[in-house]
Length: 90
Image (cartoon, rainbow, N blue to C red):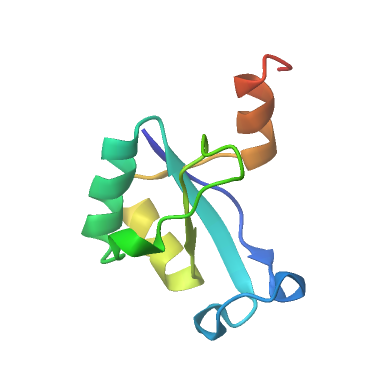
């Protein structure tokens, strides 16, 4: 399953100019699912992000790409809730 969270104003995080202030995360239950969705919505593999521990591969999406991911089957989910569940705090 592939997930996207709500759009947020990311200007405070000094994003690339293509984001123009609004972004969301896209992640999946497996790296294979994530990369397949990225390909479907025309994301480059080298845009894949990860956290410091290397255990949260994800992409940042613009508003337009978020809409494309949702049309291709991505499910809206709170990232905070997802991370709590992974840590066993849900």
